[in-house]
Image (cartoon, rainbow, N blue to C red):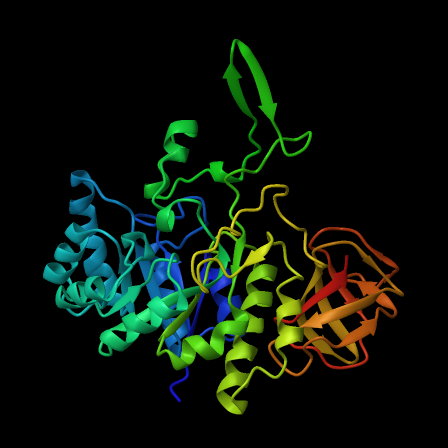
Length: 402
C-alpha cells in the first residue's frame, strides 16, 4: 500500500513548524505576493527559503501557493518569483491561471507545478489535459463524489491527485466568488476575501407594497454559510482509490486548530496503513470537535448533497480550549507559555504528536519566572512552571474541557 501524503496549511513560519511537528508530510504556504490568503501572516522570501530548508531536513515538502487570478501587470513580478522558488528548491508551485503556468514552465522549468482547486477540475479528461500542459498534480474541485474521484484517478495513473479532506468550504464553485468584491470592494480571487458568506443576512421580499422579513432567528439567517468538510472516516476509501495527497484547509486557522486536526489525520492515516482500518476512528473524530468548527458534512462525497449549509449558526467554539504551550520539561516541572487562564487543581489534557496524546493531569504546585508560587495563571504569555507527574515535550499543547 502506498501511504498517502498528509498536506497541512501553514499561514506563518510558526504554523509550519507546528504542522511538521504534528506529522504533516508536506505543507502549503503563501508568500507575500500571489497567494489567495492576503490576510494570513504569509512568509517573506527569507522565510520561504528557511521553510524549505527546515522541511527538507525533516523529510517533508513545501508547496508555495501562486494561485491568484492574475492580470497583465502581475507577470513581470511573477517571473522573478517563479525563478526564486525554483532557486530555493520549493517542491512545487500551486497555480490556477494558464498564463502563470506558461510563464513558470518557461522561466523555471525544473519547478514542479500543481493545479489549484480554483481551476475547478471536475473530470478525468480535464486532468489529462492539464497533465499534457506540464502539471504534475491536480487538486480536484470539492464538488465531486467518491465515485467520480475514483474514475479520475483510474484514468490518470501517472498524475498525482490531491483531495481536500477537512476544513472550511466556499459557497461558490471551488472558491470562485465575487461576493467580497460587491459587498466590501475586496477581491477574493486575489486573496482578499472578507468571508461575506459567513455574515448574518436578512432577506426582505416585497409584494403588494408590503414587505415580510425572512429570518432564522433574531440575529438573521446564515443563508450562505457552508458547513465544514470532514472526511476522516473516508481515508480508507480514498487511499484505495489512489488519491496521492489528503489536504487540510486552514492557513488562517490557529496553531491549536492546526495541531489538533493534523494530529488526528496523521494518526488515522497511520492506523489504516498499519492495521487496514482506523482502529481509533471514534476517538480521532472526537478530536475534530475539540477545535472551533462549523457543523461537519461529507458534502458531495456520497453524491449530490443538499445538507451542506448551516442556516442557524456560525461556528461552534469547540469542546476544549487551548490553555498553554509547552516549551520544555525538567525536574518534574513543565515550562509553559500561558494562552488562556488556568489554575492549580484543574484537570488539563495533553495534545501531543507522541505518547502523551490525551493524557490528563491535575495542575500541581506552580511557580512563575521569579520563583514565586502562583495558583492562578492569568497573565497572557506568562512563562510558568507547573508540576506535571510525567515528562512533557516541547511542542505539546495543554488544553481544558470547555
